[in-house]
Image (cartoon, rainbow, N blue to C red; front, side, top):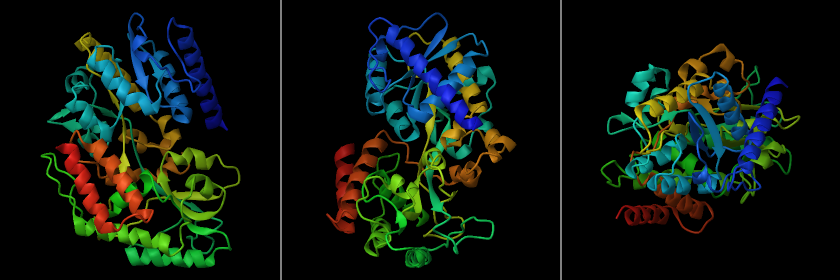
Length: 434
């Protein structure tokens, strides 16, 4: 109840902020509360403009963090401006190019190398040293992915990997004595377990709620591919090193889940299907935790996704990260960049609130705190951040990812075989980097 009340208050703050923007001359706010012309917002005296892509529950939590920071009376306050997620990166890169970008921005880690290549982001090393920020307080797997050519270009706020949600009522007889779930290791073992679960379920229920197309099949393929010892899709030198044998092996293995009837085909909303009590397990992003835990009467747990390939020490999963950045701007003095870094430091040290959105926060002190351990479900998958395999640092990561999502979706939809899928991925990568 206390957490829900805090989020409602934060949402009120967010809506209040949107209203204030709407009153500004010429500022256009759409029905979703996103500002359509953020480049026209003029900062007040000693004010930092923050372009955010967060909305909904995430947006409310971030607005709360900003409001709490401003309440500490910093020399530079922060003004949170919500943009439409689908247009965010286009608006950001365009605005920076013409000198109208924000003081603070957000970047997914997968997008950071492209922003770096375009000259959009500012190195944070000097500013962090000036304000005494200790990078050791940040998850080092996450931080390494924010480091390009020896400099740090983003403050990791979280890691958001895929995890496995399970319905305790439907898995009665498969759980440990304490109500937790221990998944079998190995591809054959996990598939056999799915078969046992399917056989034990009532008619009309499925073992696994999972989509046929979209991001998630790609993400799970990514996890298994790197568990299997897969080489990078593309190196920093732009050499395509995607392993065909392992790509095909993992794709064909995952397809057996659909072929054997463990997963209903072409689910329109696999999260809703799970929360309605129709499936024993679901694999999805940690951000779904907030949605799932607010479904009344759903008796569930969360754990790491299965290890179906490799041996001890080979566990790997897909994940991305929200990071805070300082976009390049001619008016940015060292003092302003340091002011941005002070906000980053505050957001990191107070990211316990950000954990309510479901993410694994990047601040290791917060993750290991008693307060974090007391959060339901989050502590059950906190170690996931250490096993994420990120894309190699190239400016083509995002378009390559999109190409892989499309081709893997075509495979699971039955439009092409695994070998063709590999060939099409390589063909699209070659066209992208040429």
